[in-house]
Image 1: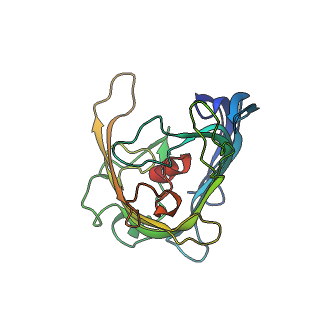
Image 2: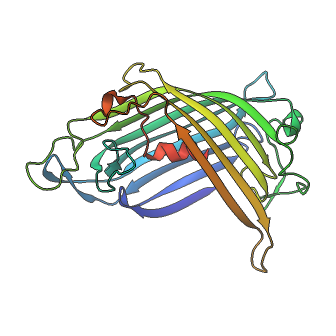
Image 3: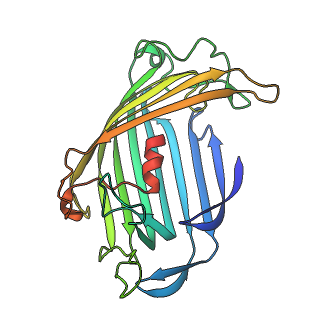
Length: 296
């Protein structure tokens, strides 16, 4: 399936692209996604000088490929390489009284990659259907009327896993202007991070990709060990919970769902000294890869 699209944001300007989605890639239940995008020319300011730049890049992903020789070890990977003309970062003040205007605005690269191994435990729905294979009709799972919202771990699918992550952001606007508002990165030219994530997740919905009822939750610990080009070491523990309630349909709808989400997290390594930024052992939050991970 080919999907053209257009959008406009403060960071990208007016942009468009084309994506392809392939169900049954290599294996019947595997989904693959790829897209390329490009944006209109934007006026920018870099180190006090006027310039122009275009949003551009690509994204690719593959989900739930069963490792040959196993029946419940799933491999997933995704990555993006992009250039943003006006990316915004909040890297200097993370306190409760931070100012929404205290941001860095810069052109530069924003790249990330994740490789994920997930083992589906032989319990509940994972006992006979570790891949999460469903029969679909018009995008909805059929013959799933009795599924979703059951007892955790007794019903539903539960998995444990490990993933490696990499992120790179470059800041081309790193020199403070001699006058006017300063949105430079204050000499910081790049921010790299890499490390490992360990997680346990549970899906108890009628269909994980398009649920109408049930719930999902995930507990995850992330650790950047300070390896290689990583700016600093840090760690982060997070928990998210999604709940879905099936609502009555109208004459012109096929499905109405009330979806609710809860998310919380804590960085044990976070230094509380307000004068520290790079040496504060804080996770790098606030860019596109973070909402991709949180929603995956």
